[in-house]
Image 1 (cartoon, one colour):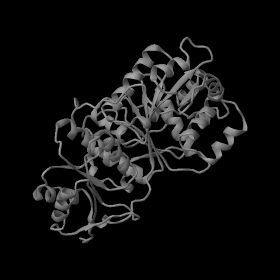
Image 2 (cartoon, rainbow, N blue to C red; image 1 turned 90 degrees about the horizontal axis):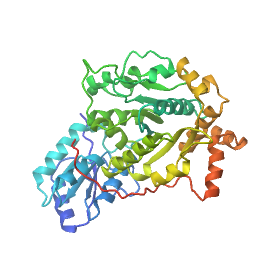
Image 3 (cartoon, one colour; image 1 turned 90 degrees about the vertical axis):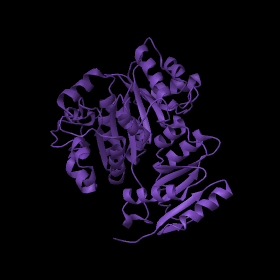
Image 4 (cartoon, one colour; image 1 turned 45 degrees about the vertical axis):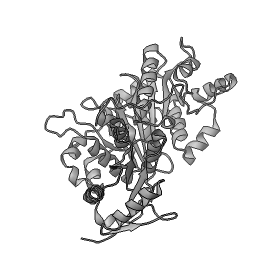
Length: 417
């Protein structure tokens, strides 16, 4: 066993509390206290919950997503159930009440060591990939179509990033049908063997499509498989981020703790909707729920409109007014091309690469993660419905990409872990 030190950074506002914590940590063997102003980031960051918990929890979530610390502990004068629940959702591993107790800190450090191999202490964490979750506002709006074609578009772009496609539609996943593959394994294998999870095991379980996308489908049944927990999902996505440049999740309609955990860990959540009243109403409710319960920061959630036609009873402007937010992107309605691709088990780029719909996916992929080849193609020809709609929006004074919501966030603690 190696004897590397645990690199710890403290950021507390109260000098007396900070001094007490330092004195406790100095009594624990193998602790390296650091300011880490220009280093690789600490193994453990200990923060204090301030007067604006919502801002603090949003900051914690971003710090963890950016890999600024391996884990974050929190010191808080407020131990109300709502605060504890928000802390867990933000990714905080341990929370200490005041006044600080040395035994509490020592036990938390032991748990930290149990979760993290000692030979990884103090080492730089490589830049991790992006997680993008695709969520359907209701069944049948095309969320799987969006997830599959975005994944393939990125994988086939000039830069050739490594792309994973994770199907979180429990028991109803259709990703293998969309890509005409017959996977030998699914993520149920990982829930049974979570202690074996590393890059080698992950790649062995996944199925590689001819486009280069690595697919991890959902089990057709949970019989004989352990149900995943939020902790297992976090471990799986952490490993996928270390292994792939882009992780696309077909999240279905997540409303359970395990599925919601995927949204919490995502860099971007895309809500797929269509211009129908029930669907738009669902979209508004889902956005409010995700933000109010602190699963997704408001700037990380956007709306994709699918199957948009030139003349519809509900306009894009109507939809934006109901959301209190501009539409990120609109995909044109092309039933024949879309169904041909689905029924043949092929992505749009393989069935009709020059179609307006396939080109729209290239534009959407480039908008989310710009790539050199996509940027050039978008500039060469104003072909997409999105471009036409964007010009119309500009005339109306709408600004695409506005990340503000028309409702306040009111975090609640009515759901448990």
